[in-house]
Image 1: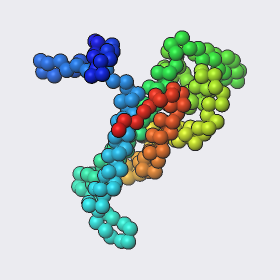
Image 2 (image 1 turned 30 degrees about the vertical axis):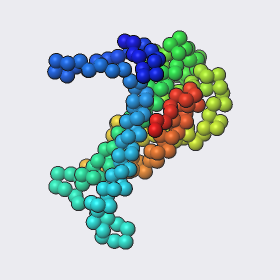
Image 3 (image 1 turned 60 degrees about the vertical axis):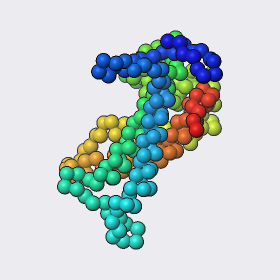
Image 4 (image 1 turned 180 degrees about the vertical axis):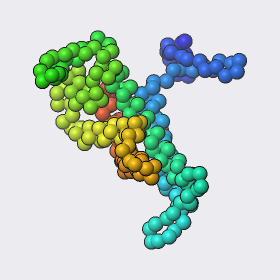
Length: 226
């Protein structure tokens, strides 16, 4: 559809209506990369708000700096529950945004040449974009090798080393959330390590690192809206 804005500019946009009852609600189709990133930021902010506002209200002081949130019979405290929920969602959606961005920036006709070792023999292989997206190239390999090679900028990460480490930590955390692998013998310790990592991860730094990476690849791809 063609949309005319208040400044007189006309633009062709792609739309996808949403059906509710007998009506269709039409608007511009959103860019999933920006959409997922926005969700990640919103949910991180919600988790911070819970920690700063709700925790002090709900916690009972039992020591100089220790507060207990009431433990309910059917689960943990509601505030604590929401805190972990929003942090987990923020991590998952932030990686979804990064993965979508990586797929977005690779040209449809791009061929990725690299080395693979099988039965002790190393040989050159070539991956099309379809094969890259289907899992033949890992997330970390895309960051380390594919992106600099595709952009023909071998020094791409030279001034973004801390950002790359942050993004890789984020991705590792997200994998643990999705798979929830455990060798624990009981429910008491089953997911403790994963939850511990969720609570310790610096999500704010991961968000800023992801934005810096995207904008280094494509200038002003992410802009802040007041």
